[in-house]
Amino acid sequence: MQSGFKESLILHHDEADGLCSAALTKLAIEKLGIETRLICLDKLYPEVVKDFEGGSRRLVVFSDLGSGHVQLLESQNRSKNILVILDHHDTSESKDPLVYNLNPELYGFSGEKDASSSTVAYLFAKTVDSSLATFAPLAIIGSTEIPGESQGLNKIPIQDAEKTGGVKRTPSGGVKFDGTVPWLSPSRASSILNVLGSVGYYRDGPQLGLSACIKGFDKQTLETAKGFEEERRNANQRMIEKIRKGGLSQMKNVQWFNAKDNYTGMSGKVVGSFCSYLRYQKLVNPVKYLIGMMNVPPEIPRWGKLPSLLVKVSGRAPQPLAKMIEIGKRPPLSKILPDSCEKLGGFGDGHTVAASGVFPVGREEPFLETLDALASNAAR
Image (cartoon, rainbow, N blue to C red; front, side, top):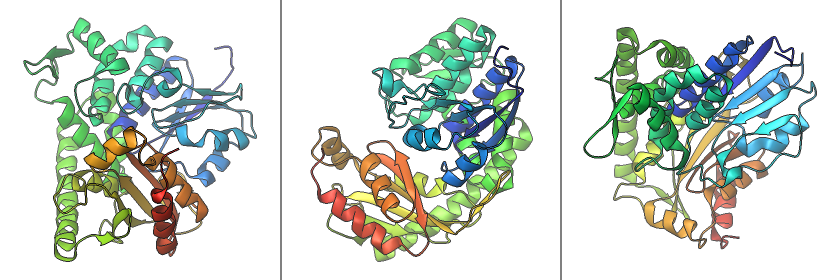
């Protein structure tokens, strides 16, 4: 390869879309004869970016991460690495010739409806080596996080997999896998990867998930996932009972809960998944932003330790509020949640109706006050 790179680093998210896109990225880069090292993150911490953008020059790929932090990536690139962003979250353009932001939002597509990160990574992989089209099912699994029938770029891996006999259409218009794993639906595969990456985050779950993506879902992986699902079910049950008993805390524009240590041992992703479930429940005010928080440890597996304890915050818009955001009557979460985190020494990113971030422990009250004030503003 002309670049002369011998090694690469893949930083990826900790759920199904992140694991599928990381697997596709790994397969593509190894086809180029470049060694890969993978690190799974719940958020793209600046400390991790600063660490990896120093050192020897290499290829660094961000899978299902990075879109909301283009300026940070540009400013910290001391080693003149080539940076490739394979993501679908809200983003901004890069003017830096070393940064390749391959986000569908920059090319007229919606990252919330038309393309998952797995689809972006699949198109990247197929461009590197057309034989990687056999891994189209990974893009289909990663895309199940986008509700509704597949549209836009997400149709491409389905069409490719139909040609190779990897999937078949169901009468309802969905898809099912054919061939080696006919018993595993895309949504079930996605659920397994989600639980491995988030609940199993500190117990090698992401590595098990990556292996399942590339080599297949074996019995041990499925058993491990079932155990993690039971853990999460119990933690969610404790949380929902607490909320049913005491209700959500209410502000003018925001309703919130703090799980604190309810999800100990799991990644911050789980509070977002719980918020996604909660937004459909009757106890939620349909026109207020829904906010969930939890404490997260400073350890990052296979990297090291962050300097301080953090609170992970996830925001979701219940359906009526989501419609108001879409037509511009209310500000998007991808703007107000990251801005609130930044004001308190943290950061965030996401989509218009679902976003997340982190900030230091002890700043919960000022965070909520800032967010509630920003949520009062009309969308601009």
